[in-house]
Structures are given as C-alpha cells and as structure tokens.
Length: 215
Ligand SMILES: Nc1nc2c(ncn2[C@@H]2O[C@H](COP(=O)(O)OP(=O)(O)O)[C@@H](O)[C@H]2O)c(=O)[nH]1
Ligand SMILES: [Mg+2]
Image (cartoon, rainbow, N blue to C red; front, side, top):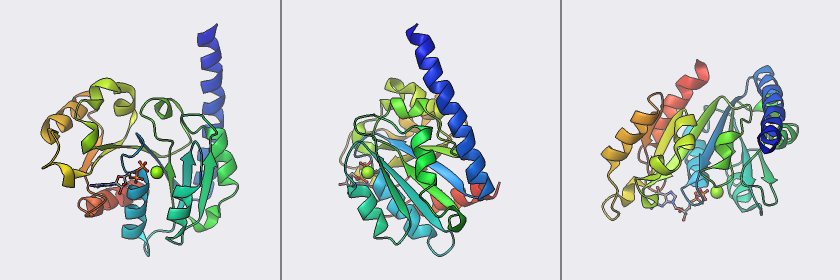
C-alpha cells in the first residue's frame, strides 16, 4: 500500500514535470536543476554562472529552500529575475512548485533558468521538475566517499561539479579516486573541477553548458 502511494505521488509529479517542460520549450528556456548538500556551494555556483554568462545569456533563477529568502536576495543583486520557493519543511522541490514559479517569471526574457534545489543528497534525486539538465555539486570538505553513500543522486545527474578545489591542499580528499568512482557508476556524467571562490573551472563549465543549450 505504501509503495502504491509513493508511485502515485511520483506519477503526479511526472505529469506536471512534463507540462513544465512543454512551457519551457514553448518559451525557448533551457532549464538546469542544481542539487547538492547544504553548504556545498549551490548559491555560489549560481552566482559564478551568472557572472560568466551575463551579457551573452539572459538568466533567471528559482531558489528552493525550506525557509527564508536569503539566497534569492543575494542572487537578485546580480540584476536577474528570481523567484524564491519555501517548501516549509519538505527536503526537495516538486514539479508543482516549479509550475507556480514559472508563472511568476518573465519566461520570454529568459534563455537559461537555474534552479537551486533544497540542500539534500537524497530526496531531490527522485523528483523531476521538467528540467533539461540535472547537475550535482559535490564539495571537497564533504569527503570523497559520497558516491558510495548516495548512489541514486550520483547516477541520476548529467553533470557533476566538484567544488571547493581550492581546499584540496588542506583536506583529505582524493580527487582522482573520486572522479573514477563517479565515472564507474555514471559514465555519462561530465565532471568539472571548480572553485567558486577563485573562479577556477567556471569558464569550462559555462562553455559546456552553452553547447548543451544549443543541442
Ligand atoms: N573555500 C571555498 N569556499 C566556498 C566555495 N564555494 C562556496 N564556498 C563557501 O561555502 C559556504 C556555502 O556556500 P553556498 O554557496 O551558500 O552553499 P549552498 O548552501 O549550497 O547554497 C559559503 O561560506 C561559501 O563562501 C569554494 O569554491 N571554496
Ligand atoms: Mg544556497
């Protein structure tokens, strides 16, 4: 019985995700769902992406958090349209919340929509939002064993950003072993080594994103 309920929830979510995708495509908006644990650097990564692409690409942002509008306020300072979703306790965003946010964004003036999902390595992996790309940010201080502990998240994504590489000299983290583990469980994932503090690796990510937007 419980399994049936879960299936129903995911089935309903899938239907709305499909509608979101249709609306995005009608308006020629490319959408990226950014997932990570709390503090991995999602907001910093959104800001870096905006700074590198601004002028070339018109960006919009949806911020997902359990509570507060701190991240939306930070992102709004970049002069891009932002909608904050507060889930009020839920550990992930669902398609219906994105549907509501899409109705509150100037879609005709947006080429790229970045969604910062709620900080969590489990639940967001289960819920499609209608996005074109799923990106996971893993960060050096979290440790290199996370692909073993959260396999669904690591296998679901199209791209993996290893953030905070500026901390590699100070933290026990084997970046090559980490990359190998990720490749073993998800051969299709493109991997980027990034520091949102120094900006290293951000141009490579932006270049790849632009090719994906065109394809
Ligand atoms: N050293 C270092 N710190 C970073 C980097 N990226 C983000 N941070 C810091 O990590 C903390 C959490 O970043 P934030 O972007 O808010 O993470 P979020 O919770 O995933 O949105 C902040 O103090 C950031 O300044 C990085 O590349 N290197
Ligand atoms: Mg954040």
